[in-house]
Image (cartoon, rainbow, N blue to C red; front, side, top):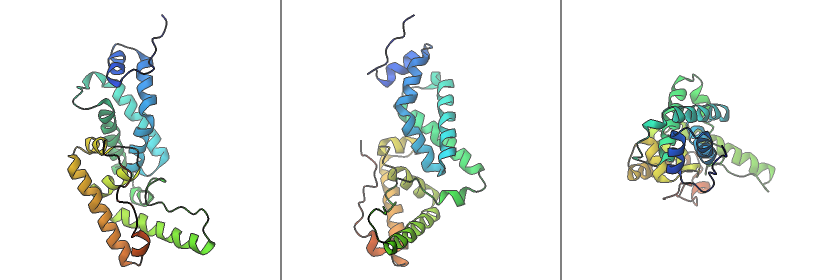
Length: 207
């Protein structure tokens, strides 16, 4: 039987095809959302290796429970919620979590680029990164998770809210509160001026 093209097919249609046993349709869903799932796991775990494993586990679980998807939310949000729960489970079981978690995803807003800086400036900004990572690790878990997910710039606020099971308004408050607390703590150790002009968007999209 000639494979049916999945190019340009919507997620709901791909889900229906996958439920009927179309492996190519589910493969398209995997390709379409692989990066988003990986980024969500990375935000929770801070380890690319662990994030890759959790992403694979999430796709396996989604395929196994595809019949349970009720379309109350988008397939992407449902999938990200599975990935997030699995990442949190792994995070709780990793003894070295705190040591690893203070290293947020490489492309967060708080990463300060070194290009074109003098050696002295590079040292100073390396110190700033270290302080930021430390202060992020000290945030309450709900604030920290919201901040890191939003900072990655990969997910919309509605996607993140679905993953965390909270209203969008609550998510935005958590992101803003996390950012406010970081500014205060960093200002207390002399970094207020460096953070004074940072954008408050934190990368997340409103739609």
